[in-house]
Structures are given as C-alpha cells and as structure tokens.
Amino acid sequence: MFLEFLYPLVKYFTPLNVFQYLTFRSAYAALTTLLLCYLMGPRIIEKLRELKVGQAIRNDGPETHRAKGGTPTMGGVMIIVSVIISVLLWQDFSSFKVWLCLGALIAFGTIGYVDDYLKVTKKNADGLSAKVKFGAQVAVALAVALVLYFSGEKEVTQLYIPFFKNPVLDLGLLWIPFAVLLMVGESNAVNLTDGLDGLATGLLIWVFITLGILSYLSGRADFSVYLGIPFIEGAGELTIFCLAAVGACIGFLWFNAYPADVFMGDVGSLSLGGVIAVISLVIKKEILILIIGGVFVLEVASVILQVLSFKLFKRRIFKMSPIHHHFELSGWTENKVVIRFWILGGLFAIIALSTLKIQ
Image (cartoon, rainbow, N blue to C red; front, side, top):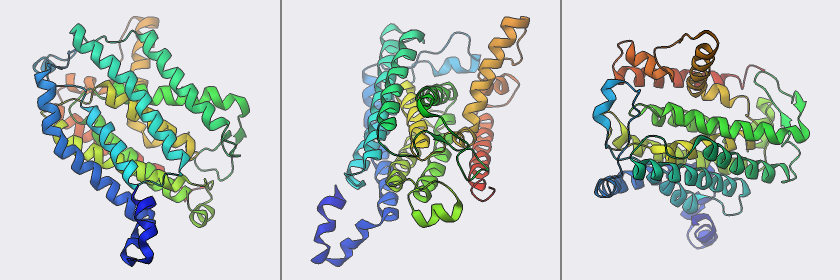
C-alpha cells in the first residue's frame, strides 16, 4: 500500500524514495508485526479467557503438562492477522508470489482454526478427525501446487539440491505430488513440534530469517549469478513476507515464552508450517528447507520411528514422541529442552546458508 500510494509522491518529497528499497520495507514489515502482536496480545488473550478457549491436554502427555490445561489457545490468530496487515502495508501489490503465500497462510490457518475450535467445544485434544484434516491439507496444498505449476515459470518443476549449482532433475508432472507432500509434511511437522512453551515459535524465527535471506538473494540477478543459485523473478518481495513473519513470531513469543500465557494452536502451527513450504517451493529450496527446518524433520522422524518400532518389534525407541517429550521424561526441564532445540535450530540455519558457497 505504501509503495503504491506514497512512492509516486517522491517527486514532491524526495525522502519518500526509501519506499522503493526492499530492505527498508522488509525491516519495517517486521517492526509492524512485532508491535501489532505486542499491542493485540493482551486483548486477544483476555478475550480468549472470557470465551474459555482453553487448551485440552493429551491424556498420555508428561504429568508436568497437566497444569497447562485451560491455558488460552488459538493465539496463532494474532500472528496471521499481524502478518496480513503488515504485508498489505509494505508489499508490492503486483507481487503474485506474495499473494500466493498470503492465500496459503489463510487457507492452512482456516484448517487449524476449525481443528482448534472443535477441540475447545468438545473439550478434548482430538479436534478434526485425522482423515478430514489430512484431506483438507492435501486440497489446499494441491491448489497451491497447481497455481505454481501453471504459472508458466520455467524453473517450477526443476529440482535443486544443496551443493549442486544446476538442477539435478526436471520432475515434470511429478512435481505436483512432490510439492503437495512437502507442504502437508511441513505443516504437520511444525504442528508436532508445537508441544512446549515457545519451542515452535523460536524455531520458526530461525526458519523465516533464513528464508528471508534466501528470498532476497534469489530475487537479485547479480547475487544469484554470483552464488550459482536460480534467479527467481519477483522472489525478493517474499523477503517482506518472511520478515513480517519473523516480527510476528517474536511478538507472539513475548506471550508464548515459558510459562506461556497463550498457545499458538493449530491455527498458527499448520498455517506457518504450510507457508514455509510454499516459500521454499517458490525460491527452489525444496530440499534445503529440510535442513533449514532440521528440528522439525527430527520431530517427525522420531514419531515415525516410534510407531514403526512399536508395530514391528513391540518396543519403543523413545520414552515418548515427539522427541522433545523424550528429553522431558529423561529429566531435562522444559526450558532446557526449548533453549537447546533453539540452539540446534540456529545451527541448522547456519548450515543451510553455508551451502550457498559450498557448491
């Protein structure tokens, strides 16, 4: 909005020239969401308490989590709302890629909202049935994949992997199910990780910072050529989206840090998990996102291994899955688990960025 309405006035007031710079708009998009979350937070949390929108705690969870029952959930709404407002204020309205990400954020968020609503009204931790939730996620992911596939951009179906400058394969039509799997997988991975106060929120900050850097580099022809990564026209505008998400997560973490005043809920985890996959698809970092969000991958892997081990050998590998609960039951305090996982998330982000020069 600012770019469309204020930048044309630069001929009358030259300082307005700053609105043409992506870095300026990205920085202020982050500041906008941070302030919005900080200002909206107390009111939203109070309203959730009035509506008795409390979190139902799973029966088989750690005993220490019992005290969290009734803590307001669905706090992810403040993240989504603040990101939407900030992006609309600071983005270039002609950016198709940003509109696609906003659409995905809202669509996955709607699934999470319905799931949270059912959990609250039913007073249990089940919500939507697994089949319905999965089907809805697949439908949204398929819609996004088809939009990208038919966008006409030549890079869309090409698969890039870390350490290789050139695409290793053109997936063709197979790219569509691949993209759907990535979006649904990332969405559920963040959802699984959101089990401790501030855990998923802090990890998402690392992920969005890294994606913001990669989006900026991918949208610059000079930098992309120098680094040997695909140049994606218009990808730079996604830097605004990514930093808006960073600001929103930081603002939300103010209220979500231990002991949490509010939980993100599925409305937050499903939407943010889905949108990081969409961004990675747009900037051709579909495989690298598995390194960037390495902790999310470990969380999902722990669940898969636990289930397979029990079904095949009637034995459990971990005391409880996802793996963050295993460490809790091993004697780590909740804060220690969260901070150590944040450190691990930062290491994964650094490793991912280092691949830009190791190829």
